[in-house]
Length: 363
Image 1 (cartoon, rainbow, N blue to C red):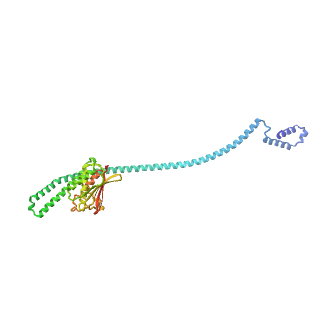
Image 2 (cartoon, rainbow, N blue to C red; image 1 turned 30 degrees about the vertical axis):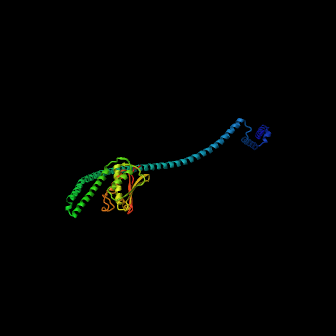
Image 3 (cartoon, one colour; image 1 turned 45 degrees about the vertical axis):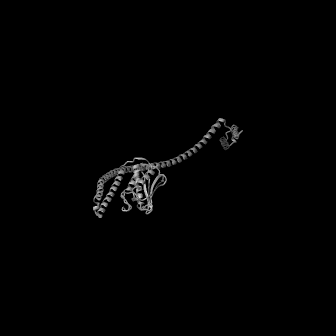
């Protein structure tokens, strides 16, 4: 039997004692006994039945759960406070991102506006360039037509001057003095020079209007035939050599014949005063292109002035020593450009000159 049950039994027996014996127990003793019983009730459940124990356990668990709930609530409040702080940070970040996006939108609008202005300026410039190009093209065509017309019309009077001067020399030459004969010779020589110049000018103008009629060209044959033709009017012996086999090309045959004639004529003329004139023709490969060259051992030229070689009426040497119209190499340059190629030269005074050219469609 538990202490609690023993105390309760003793209290009950005391209550059932005769009055005399009961009086012997003081009120304080009874109160103390009751307090002990209550404490034992609080600390000892052995006297309770199962249902009472269950109810008490539930009450205790409920009290424990209540404490747990309070802790949970406090934890939840802390989490909510932290979440709120994080939310504020996110709000600040979001506002910053919105500001950045707004700035980007403004910048994009500014760029689009600048691009529109640039496009308008470009379109306007292209329009003006096209207009100016058209005007220049028309002006050049008019100038070339005028030059062609004037040159063509001058040929007949010049032919008449040359012809009648020649007849005058034949008919009355023996009656004229040496001075008069010299005058007639000057007339014929200068008229002939003028006629040659006009012929070259006509050829130069014609090239600007002519369309290409391309075909496969044997460059070896072109140079060989041209050299033989040039030597018919040249008394001095000239050594001519084609180094290896020249690659064929595609181009306008008539134009290329004119180009080859002018190049060989130029080399033969400027090497004519050498002890043993030599002209060499060959080819080489450069940056995937076929480069043809014509080389001589003539008087050469100063490279500082080579840009003038291909200009109309540009001459680097005295006309009295090396007569010419100053148009031959300009014609060569125009023919090469018509074929989408390039031409350049390299020389040294007293050491000869080399002319290089490509034709764009060389194969």
